[in-house]
Amino acid sequence: MEFIYEYGLFLAQAITLVAAILILVASLVSIGHRQRADQHEGHIEIRDLNEKYRHINETVCDVVEDADVLKMRRKAEKKEEKAKAKATKKSLKKGEDTTVKDRRKRLYVMNFDGDMRASATDNLREEISAILPQISAGDEVLVNLESPGGLVHSYGLASSQLQRIKAAGVPLTVAVDKVAASGGYMMACVADRIVAAPFAVLGSIGVLAQLPNFHRLLQKNDIDFELLTAGEYKRTLTMFGENTDKGREKFLEELEETHTLFKSFVSANRPSLDIAKVATGEVWYGQNALQEGLVDELQTSDALIQARLKDWDVFDVRFVHKKNWQEKLGLAAEGALERSFLKIWQRAQGGKNY
Image (cartoon, rainbow, N blue to C red; front, top):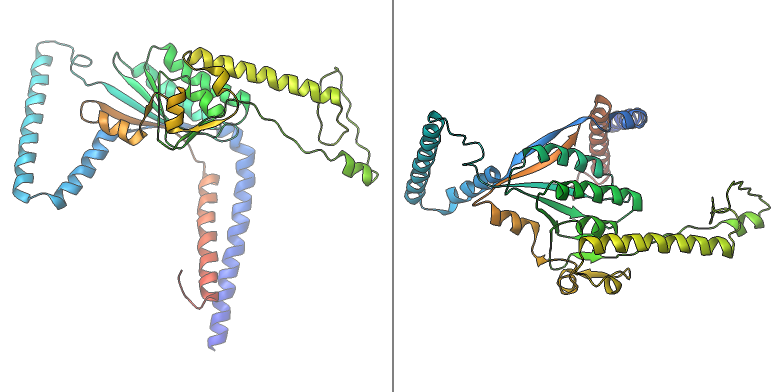
């Protein structure tokens, strides 16, 4: 009987697993059809980082500080807050405009996590569009940037989005905690100030292109490949046809032209750089990048934000894509799938957890 019970339980888990896989596949297919239509749907989320760190600080103080001292300090803080509220109320009664006059400077924080296609550019566009109308004199923008680079046109657009901030006359700082290379550095160089962690990777001001060629493999297996073009350089190199020296020369010429544009862009944004020295495709760690002029200061994004919390209002700005029911269902199915695999694996291991 115990064997039948165990077998029945295993069979139920297996059925659940298969059902979860089917649901996941169906949802992914549906998402694929609707992804383009839904990619711009979403909303802006603003998080008050002052409040976040204030709550963290209070949690720590509740544990480490003397209860009487903590009580007195909080009483004094409440008294100070009441006095400020009273002064603001008095100014409003007199008809004074306190919206800009009395408010503290603001730091708007955005995050860019770059991939090959700079997919985060859509989010960045929405975030910049949301904050620019709200910015007043003295406010600044911080972009936490992480990217190893990618497609030229994609990162060119991402850089142009950051230039919107500069064009509005708003001071822009880019913080690099891990890596801003190639297209990532193309974005970073737009900033008025670049700060980087000591071991962050920066630079790689160069252009790369690579592709395999299967012509000899196809020829060996008596497979013909035909590529028809109109225009002498419509296709210079191909994966399946026979590449020529003339095609390679033209392709290299195009790479050099792209590299020249890249160098000109960096030079225009950071004119103090010795572009001939740094535009070799090499990368530098933070300390060396500082010596070469690729960054302005060694500092993490966390340290920069912490330093502003006392006198500034700091806000984290994110554009969050709206998840339709298919995506939510897919996430639920993915979770069920993982749990089912884990349970089956644990049973196979005799119930042990690792």
